[in-house]
Image 1 (spheres, rainbow, N blue to C red):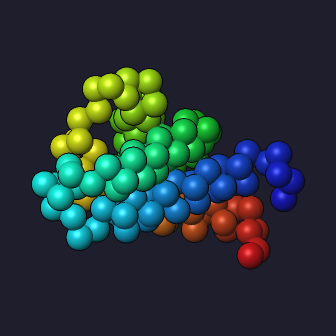
Image 2 (image 1 turned 90 degrees about the vertical axis):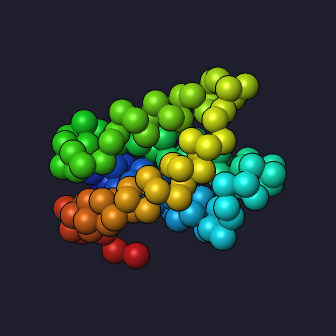
Length: 125
């Protein structure tokens, strides 16, 4: 597959989403909301991961998005825009909720999409 193949690009972007969702979950794992609110390093890492997830989601083709309608693509992209452009109004409770509740759900839905894209592109590691 050529790197210009949209399905391969979508696979790479979905993998970016998966990697950064796993990282955010790992970074925040073990934190209560209170301890998360006091840990600027973990906040910054989690926020950055969510930004990367949103940017990668934005670059996934509409065709691939339609293959996984259970993934809230517009919400993911919208969250990225809020974090990247309205950083003075970041709601840490919302960030914590996204990482602890929404990202595990996202990972569940990304896995079959990634597997399907790997099959479509004959992906070989």
